[in-house]
Length: 117
Length: 117
Image (cartoon, rainbow over the protein chains, first blue to last red):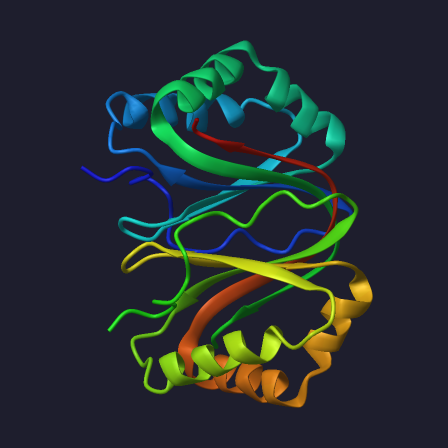
């Protein structure tokens, strides 16, 4: 069973700046029990946040996992970060799922995309 | 042979904001000939840019690849984006290696890290 199995294999598009971006880079522990279920629930929940634009995810097997969330503005991201279920999941992540992580919250100033003809 | 095989499996740390972050999300084509060599060369070159802070990379097998580059300021990123060899590699990427990609350039406003005790 693969995590994030519903994610389409296309990058989130380049929205019109400015928009907000949260980059979460993580190394996981060996104990991933419950992760898939919680992650699926988070993917559902975040879609209800007004101003949520999308999410990119990649994980090198046995290596780094990177999640990038895109939001129309800082208020939308703040609403997501304040969500009670999300906060509970973060606490469980620190207690169980993550060996180490870094979160970078940023304002996107320019962007562009490319798709092969 | 794995790409990015020299990359340590720890996330780049949370630097003191503000700093600059470039997020490159890509789906690759089946034709990856020459990619590993060029990528290794780019990883060497970028280290010579004053203000380069580090890079995170993850790729889901058969899926999305995410590269995040961190720079002290916009000038450092501009210098990297202007590098002649880097620009040639980008052109080859569009011609051969990438099915689609998005680049998001952003200013990091806050960040934090976690490491398991």
